[in-house]
Length: 419
Image 1 (cartoon, helix red, strand yellow):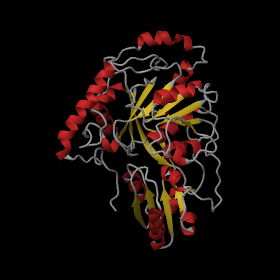
Image 2 (cartoon, helix red, strand yellow; image 1 turned 180 degrees about the vertical axis):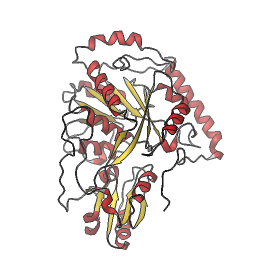
Image 3 (cartoon, one colour; image 1 turned 90 degrees about the vertical axis):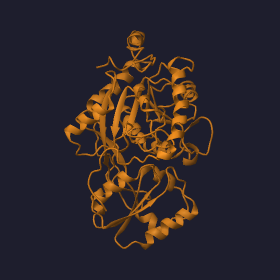
Image 4 (tube, one colour; image 1 turned 45 degrees about the vertical axis):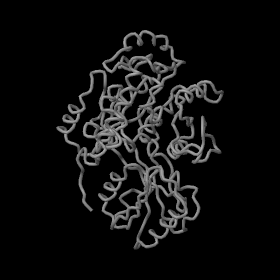
């Protein structure tokens, strides 16, 4: 298997013969955005801090790890709610997750966050405006301090206080095309609505010149901030607890700026060296994890790849059992946290599979020593704009300062003067 760091743009595939359809699709998207920009369609604003994390590319930019980063950062200081669409869930309308909630009713990614963060609220609603209103009005959630919107960059009926746009390093929007020829949901100019742009999944050894080239290529406005993040892997965790693993957090710090908390001690990823690995994934972009695991130098890797958000059926389970059975010893199965949410309660996995099935948690790390700066801005924004803050009275002053940008956006609360 080829090893080494890939270059930006190398995961992009454009179907040239579909470009005429992309042009038609782009007309519709541009018309919709124009209607919001001129006020024909209205974006609703809220007194409560709202942070949106999203992208303009279909799938695989790292939304869930970045939302989880924000949860880890904010949950010890504020009451946090996450609102997601709940993609591919088998339910409708607004649902607030509780102790009895099952994965199919809210979707795999919200369920993953609900399982990991027991002291926050996780809700799903396709209509984000109605979801926010329910979170603000229902007795159980009406005192939340901040709402994190998962995958809501195109949901323009809500105007967040901070709009975070994620761009996959391997699928830079400057090289991609609109659907269906490429994977862009809207034109590259949509990035102008973002307050913060994060280039995600960067190689860990990115050179200073590459940072400068990427910064220039994106050509952001002065009101926008650019960050770079890379993926780190936590210890492997058994999905089914056949083995005893110390589940204490690596970091016990009470520092609100410390987001190392959340990685449990388990089996270091390097322990797969020399083993035969079955990589079981149903995510949008498995290439990066496949590359990273190959760098650990296992004996070999057998990828078993399903579509994003795939619901495993009996035929799939038989394939998993038979594929793992065919591998030589020593062997192990590695899957992602999102896949684990869907595998946890399926029937039919063999005892051998259940005993050797491990989850590989990921977390994001800010590069160029910019993590603390990002953290401080998030905490300052929520603290300043919280309904319980003594500084909330200053929101109107901030509104007049920040009500207009080159991107033709209106705002009611802002983080730009928070330093």
